[in-house]
Length: 257
Image (cartoon, rainbow, N blue to C red):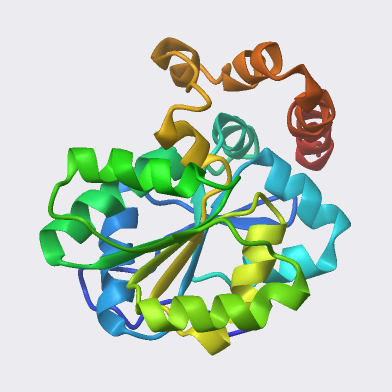
């Protein structure tokens, strides 16, 4: 994995404060600041990785040393997930706000359209990346989509994907294989791909394409997205248990004197 690059970006990108939540460091950045960091990474030209961390990431990192190492090596870990905000406040180091994968992707699409950066959408079910790209282009007609491909994070597919992405020359690579596979895939392949910015975006393509609806705004504001997802997708119950009650109990244990 590439060494973490914490401060080569200039005075407009000071090193963000990092908050440790159950052993996972999360950067205290706002959405606006995350976009500034993202553009600085693109301009730097070297390969970078952003992870959008939520409570599921934290719990998985406690079980998986490889995933924990990938998060630690990422250039920026944004606080995606309302539970992280509550946990950080409880532990005495509040975060200033959320930077979700959906919102960050939309902001980066706007940035790419304005600056001429090229996007590549990798992952999700066949056809979903293309639908997500069409939705982004509908908002930003000047956006350049360098490519869309479902593919697979399986090791045997890596040579082909490296060739495909390398030929497309994207400035921003969005990978939607779900955690931890997407983040491990990026960490493993970025030294070969050398895309200026790669981000694991989970289910973002499903949301952008309209195949999966976002929770209502009022539920997102008060941190009840998990309840909406559980009602819409009951098969997620194991993930919800991990991300809500188990995560909460572990944070309470950590915060005890």
